Length: 423
Image (cartoon, rainbow, N blue to C red; front, side):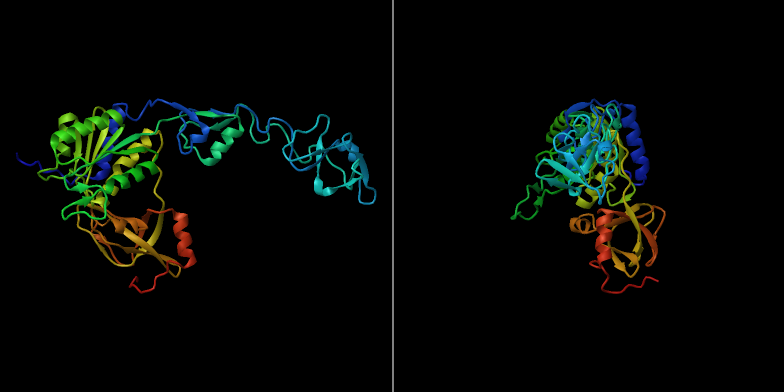
């Protein structure tokens, strides 16, 4: 059988736009069903409808301090020179923070400003004013108030607010179920004693972690050897059980790379190959109205293709805009050369030199997973550029939280020890 060589000159942005457009047109990204879940299990879930307060918070006038509840008018005239005695349980009632305000009382005096006489009277030295140290009904939340709009990922603070407003169940969009299919006869489960020629399967766990971070629900399937019929059966199973399928490896044009042929047989291949480095052999297809992405086998390529193509699908499936990647400006420690025609994603580590950030390129091999694990960010070289000069200011798209990274750099833990010609 003649090999079909894939096209690699297509911009990835164009491929993604066509991919998303096809998914929108077939209804994949719209009209998702909602599910009701307990608020205590809803962290990170996306609301399917607006959520309104069931009750006010507080739902009764409450003491805001430990102290005594009083009628403010009965305290007028109290001073340091002329303390006022109030009969306990009649003119002054002991209350703790959060207690209901006794009927007929309208102020609370802090316990620190009260002395007691023979356990029958409270002595005060300054008057109270109506409403003092009292939380009125609805001070925080009013019954019927909009708490969370539709399409919002719930934070820990949102959950606290919902529960405070008497909301115990919330309608959310289902998490996208993502099937991850590791393939390759050479793959074996991770172990400390692989034989020569065996490759430890690690991409599945890496991709599952990314899917979880983006709000999806991953499932890594058992390793499928390079057998067309077995892969076909596994893909059909994954399609029946999931919303999105990632087939890892087999996306190139080798004699045992079956993914493109299989997707074409069962559905439609929209893209096979994009102008990126790494990650050029990616496959974007649709089978049974569901997206299927053929992810290259090299770990850095797999991670990049998942970022570029699976990440937006997972976010849009939840009704969310993919968040913008955090970024910083830095100067390059050394020149980056890149051939014309492909958009290159170069991993860098950040260091601090005096009052500026310096980006140091790391290993550029697609199989060097630790270079990715140790990188702080990525510098993107455009398709029509041949690279960047040493000392040139570039945008670094961060792989780690910006606040954490800048804190490390600020404390001096990440200061350049050597010297670079950055001028």
